[in-house]
Image (cartoon, rainbow, N blue to C red; front, top):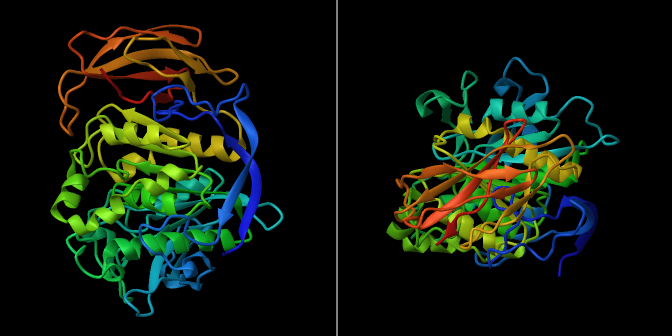
Length: 425
């Protein structure tokens, strides 16, 4: 048995959906206390904590890596290009990436850190790293498809202008069409292995606080994020944006990929993510082609420490995901132990029970809206809305008799949005 390392740090204990407390019953979690934060032990393990797919212990060891000055971009000396060892199919290989170190970060002044995972046909995004570094995080963005980002690329660049093929071997993302191959030869196995190795690299850096190292992924990267959150218990926080796991019985592009490639279903297993204590924030539109809105609420209720927020008509893109301020506020809240976002401490239900929120100092509710639908919540469902009432931190509301589903959106005086999970009527 490998050695477990027990560490203490401040973490939020209010579990949430859309910054909401939620558990499997849809009721308020019994783990909440009178205080918004508490000192809590974290167990970090140097091997996989879930075994649906066998991942070697070597992924939890510090990888080889080297900087590449020829791939550096101008404009920010805090961010360096690098290559990290991540072998594929028995062949030596290296994944390209960008590593950003904020000013003032040293072994004596460690900073929180984040692993960034791009979506399909994406690459390591320099500007995404910069956003997190500006926020005070050590940030590592790796490429998961055998690409090297071009120096002129932006987060909105089409793939033809985003990257060139790497000289090192790596599989391409085939939307699980390679799932029937031996698992070690598939793209998802390579991507998951590379992501866990990237986390090991972050934990090895003297400037990075291993107790406060999280992960954030977009689109296909959010699928990877949800998967590795269940296998790797070293993450202080996890933010899958757009997609997650547990999708096979729902609507959406990712769900169709599983249905078309049954051998890939081993990756849709949500058993691991339900077991970890990592604070998780599922962020997604209320209407998106990649995943119906329901799985995130279901998964949120089944996880030990999860939140979910729905953003009305949020478009599906890397730059839009990276611009979501609530994601950074959530990460700051976890690593600092100081409340940033409204916490909903009692959930809506079929009886239209009042929703109660916990507010930080200087924070107040500016608006509350009920989103409801009368059709099955597919990727193209239409949401209607009506105003909810609030007094202080208590929201009251009503839902039309024709509604089959609803959730509540709450906006604070800083323009930050949180939501409840979806309630099925």
